[in-house]
Image (cartoon, one colour):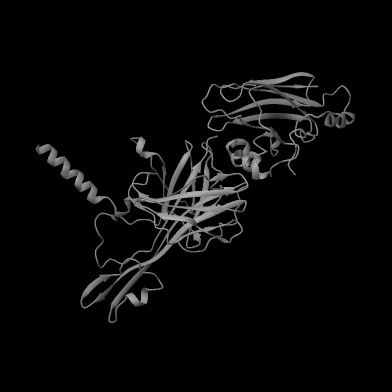
Length: 175
Length: 277
């Protein structure tokens, strides 16, 4: 049941290939998200838990990725999922973990690009959405960023936000 | 010197006038919103002045019980009662909302015997009432008291399976779930008295941490005609909420006259965690 770390690297070429034929070639079908995890000079550092979800007015939030300590014995890493507190409230608490295609390993400081196909985004209808990224770090702080976007997105840059503490720059683009 | 004496006398008078129930009883869970596969909660329970500091008396655990979301009674584990607080654990083996409660029912009252009015001793219940009234007692007056102190903790998604009223004392009916509270969002609760909407019940709300602030910040509200009350949380934190049957004018200012008719009393205490947005 436990997905291998490889299987949860999101934005696989397979997903993109499957989604492509259903859309006109000119219409971007993939959202790329670049997340910067800041390097922090602290005595005790743990890589943050990070949740990504999509909100649309009037619809239930849809979790698209969660990075947490998914490979601990007895699934112990799930104990701290609730510390990603807004995500836990709007979506996480109704899910079971590990969540196939959503669970991912925590990431080290640096820039990380992850991609979501239309299918991974929940086969979204056209409209206005918000991507929310929330990070919570063990013995550290917590921060949440919101990036509004329109789906289907226009090719190219789609929006960005900058964190101050637990997240660095976060940007989205479409292709 | 004279001034000091005067001030001291005034202070003493103020203390004497304070109602006997000035101490607050409370439970403090280690978490109210939980995730994970092997989930435990630890609860501190005490009676104190300041919230939430154990500095006066432990809360007795004799009547402490816990219920799983499916309604089955769970085990209270690792019970201990120290000088200032009690503590215990509950293994939260099911997903959903759990209830941990101590409900103590009693009977208060008086009777006349040999030309004297005597009060029923502490610890009188409906079960032992008959044996506590001596033969020959007349003018027996009794009233029930129900004191409930309960908390809720939730693993995963909140559920409302444990809010079915028992019909005894004051009980909470969630309109807003007690484990889904966020600062800046108003919460509505309904309180029942003996199973019926408790209209006009006094509600006291105090945020914890009062040792480190000058202003108690106590909020005093009243339930409406349907027993409902709306609580506004300005800040995240742990809040103590106390609902009681209404007090009559002048009550608490000195002992009641021995021949006063006993009054139906009920009180409800809960600790609510309000998270940051």
